[in-house]
Amino acid sequence: MRPEAGSRLKLYSYWRSSAAYRVRIALHLKGLDFKTIPVHLVRNGGEQHAETYRAVNPQGLVPVLEHEGRVLTQSMAICEYLDECFESHPLLPADPLGRARIRSLALQIACEIHPLNNLRVHKFLKDQCGGAVDATAWMQHWMSEGFIAIEQHINNGRSGQSMYDGDRPGLFECFLVPQVYNARRYDMDMSMFPAINEIVARCLVLPAFVNAAPENQPDAEPL
Image (cartoon, rainbow, N blue to C red; front, side):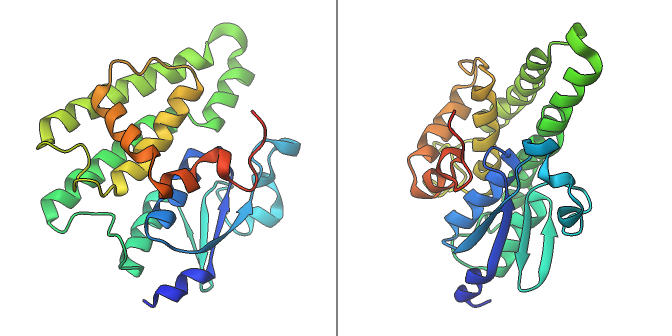
């Protein structure tokens, strides 16, 4: 697909959404121009619940990617779509085993960690359980459980490099960095995860990650 096709990309995003953060990283890694359409997940009960947005995504979630009239949802599917459509900076290794390993690591975040500590779950715990459940402790627990496994996977699979191809981050880093951002946001102790911390530190100085960071988004709010 022609590189200039990236100019027709629109991303429905919320600055603090880790799922949208993943896609922003992927877009910047691949050097694609895109227009951000902010969807505030908190203001006025959440703009994602409005009928106009539900017409775009019936799930009422971000991110959504629009490309040449096509509408895509779910961050993993969007990232892989971008990788298949745009050749610059492949997000996955060339070999099948390498691709499976990276997908497995990304899915551990997308399917095992994030669903237990996203905004909807946090709100439900606070609204329905009152003070009976410490929502922050809940989130820290499940992030820790997931990071323990990922740390071991990294250490078992590494061969002198943190990232899958030297200094070229890809799909895994698109998912890892936003999840660590969430962990730090909720004051989680990350000292037990040196391999994860090393990867994240190397990523955060790269332009793609700087440009994708929540605080650098057009809809970012003062902390």
